[in-house]
Image: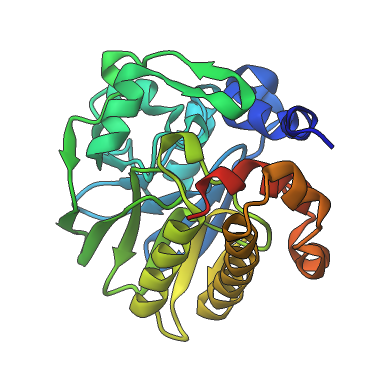
Length: 298
């Protein structure tokens, strides 16, 4: 199987990632709300999982899915006891996590993100593996406060710490830790139950996503609730299994890289066959996942 055909076979995911703002009818999407802890919720709809923190100091939002869903998301926020978001932090730049930025930022929401998120949104992005472009974001969609390593919010009775994890899902990922509530939003570092997309065109690496998972595991205990970027609400045990899968995949693919195997050869060797039943029924089958992440295996 050629690299070109492998890439084309993943077009459905790229449609979700870069085009879904125009590819679905917003009125057909339901925003579901899951209570994670007191005043903390996970919102799911179309795109990345949203974190919501309500309280007297203002509504704090983590990611915002797609622009056509903003009204529904705000309605869900109000049903959960919140108001129009006062603060928004983007876990990374992808459109299924930042698509609502313009709607929120244009009406006064203060947007935070890692430095590289602003740069990617400001310049627009191109995923060479799929020949897909995203235009530069409008001014109101850009983060107005950025950070290089970490930032801490003190609000609604909790200490909320955002920490950059380098070269993981992208080059601008952040994990958000609610210290008192014992909740972590992992962004797309964690795809709960399936192989993750790794954006190697913009600094993502398999090794980096493993290091990021280890960082989250070090923060967590057996009672920690972990909001993944995609998939159901998780816990430390589920993240640990995911991390073990990533490490197994890394070990196998790294050995093939050292042996000088091309991506086509790596795919044909089926190195992830033993992982497929558990992890290959989400966004990618193993062949497609290898084709995407192999260039970022170091």
